[in-house]
Image 1 (cartoon, rainbow, N blue to C red):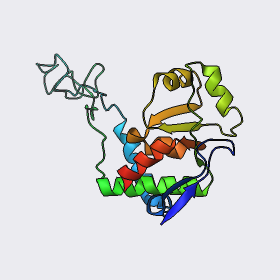
Image 2: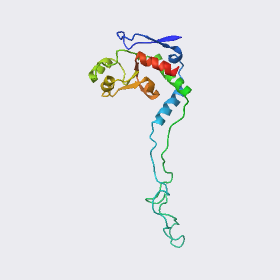
Image 3: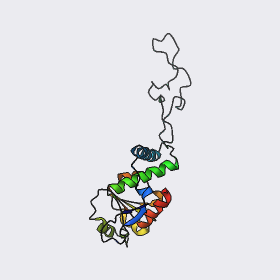
Image 4: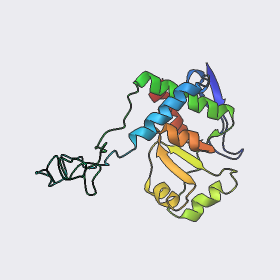
Length: 206
């Protein structure tokens, strides 16, 4: 079965586009979508923080003072975490925050997001959104009447004109259908896809 995705405007040459209901008509799975978004955000973390433990700090080879008779607390090394310039008790180490998510869960999660965007009227199709020049004002003229604080444009391939025209507009993000990010989808107020991009998404998520 098929369903239709509305065009960005009545004058848009794309018109309504037929898509598969199995992909764009799926029920919203909030738990899976949350897991998918958390996985992408966690994977973007650098995980490069590093601190030194008592074994990494230089010095401290000899006992600061004898065990008994000084009137002071016993101490074995000046590199103890309780000493100034000593090591860190629970030191941070370089690590990966990446979470595992199988391909089937990814496809179901993205289908769920796209379906919900369509139900909310936040997903539209357009063939005329692509600028014919690298000038920012040309793209601005096409999106000026769109009531959205954040716009995501999904295309088959990002050409030079679109890349140059969009890079100075802070609320516009351009992404290829093959690299679609769940985080970009859920954070966008309006998702504008080209017919070719929708075709690629159908093939990828089928």
